[in-house]
Image (tube, rainbow, N blue to C red):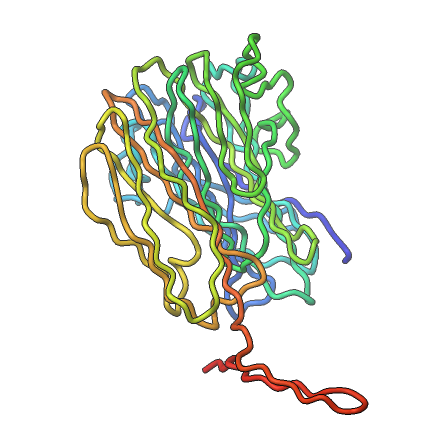
Length: 409
């Protein structure tokens, strides 16, 4: 396949010359039906929303790198109102927590021809004082890759269904999962990467930050472990020893027929604080395989040894299917535990070469700290087995008969 690299630069313009206190960034895309080589591109940036924040992310410019330069895009989420600078915004973003604001920017773009495109954002600066990278107003750089080919059906990027929110405590195991869902059913692989920056903000060339350290590389004792499961996507930090703000980055690759056809990366911030809290635990949920037409039912439970109030979340492609989607029914809220039932009546439309991944997350609330546990399981839907097999032997061979129940209406 001929690959041609064109950089699509997503430039976030702060409203003042001050730092914009960025915590996280990611880019996703999906094809626009009926329009060749045209994709809807969504940028999500999480910023510091506390009273001390000194900038707001309200507009976004895009340089496609192929001779087209767009005007400033307005933020598309949240109510209208005035920001901290007294400027009126059609959308103010959404407060995910009292200290974190979610900002969404969306546009469409038509790419000129088949090729592999690197879509990137390089907003002005992260906040100061990040423990695992050098000090200074380092621009954030995040990229995603899109492959367009006339021989392939237009594809969507992995969609990250779980937000980059969930802080940790010193000496307590920290877990998080992006909840990546691939609408096309392609195989996903996960890997940690080093946080990237640019020499000058708003440029298309990203590179690893010099002096960046993975969290475990800061622990001289060697007892801290930090890893990402390449199959499930869960990040485990066991156990943080130094309090402060850290940034980590990872990539979700999209593979089809053993060929890398796209990826999405996320750069996110984690705050580690001293606190007396133990994370909740989700009871092990095994992988499963069912024959199409069966109804799959199983229980998901979690518990917390501190008896904290728990919030349970589950996501995954089975819930988003048009025909016979899966459901989760909660048994109700109980202090210190959660329980609910997953149910999915499978149909022939659900048969897939790759298994479905379903994510589960539980988070506690304990004196201002919020620890969580995340897990997932894989569900494989297979075609029906043949029934009533019989054979008749002849001198030069045999004849096999069976009932094939594969009827797709």
